[in-house]
Length: 366
Image (cartoon, rainbow, N blue to C red; front, side, top):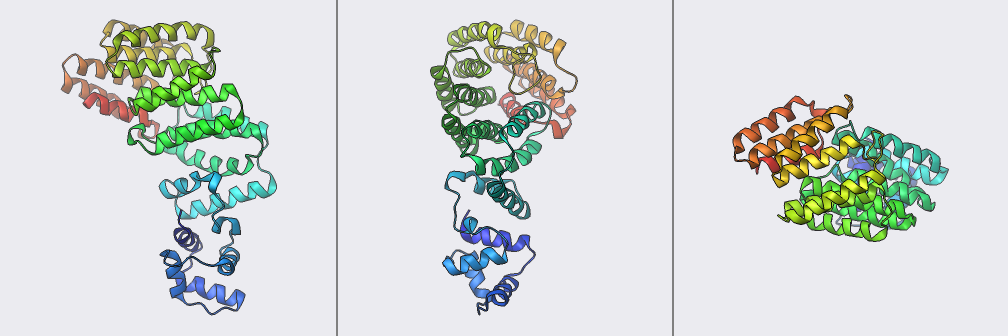
């Protein structure tokens, strides 16, 4: 965020006019600046010098480091503030972040507990709720990255945050996934490095977006470790979807077989984004088979999945309904397929919608 915009946001968060801010500085420090000074700062026509930065820091009640731009390794902060956080909330986040730096913040165990909660909540919350909550966590955890294990925590939170942006936009989601991979590398933990890349890759592959990036991330995950894990399974599924969308049916089917074998070694049953239970494995099979035009396999996978999807996770039942709409559209009934899928999406409460469902709807219409 430019220094001018930051000053404006902080001023407005405190209900001060430009003239009111100038007056407060004058009263506090015995200066004689005019409203025009503040206007020129906010328009970035003039950058405040060191003295006035200290004045602004005191009057706006924000650490001087914020105004000096000490956010290089925390570059995501400007994106958070500019895209999804209202100015007054951005101000609160800045305060929380620097308070964590000064006073410690949550312990490593607390952060691990938060990850468990987010892994569960992701399964039922909508994208907007996740984005709001995780943005606040990112602002805090980035102040504690001198603890190596917290790079792993940060990388998983970044991955979750990235999934709230469309992978097809070629910008935010992909940038965040790459940043998450770099953060995981900083942790030195192979499991985190594989999981972050695999989860990012399957998110893009399932969405049918940024397929080149999905393939690269999946390749990296598979190269880091061949130890059976949920991260590796996600990477294999990503490659299977990429191959299907590129028209390489032979490779896609071979990867499907690999995923089935790997699931026997790495699958897990808890309802969490960090797990791949049997019903979720079948959700992947359902979509892949629908994309490949294999209706028999798709229907069987849908039936198996519906037996076990928890009632508390209606979004995933909607996924299966959209897969059926995709099958109809691919079989030639484009209007009927789109109508079927749209009816299923409309039946799900809007606050339960995920970005992935919306992108699947776009694929069906196309």
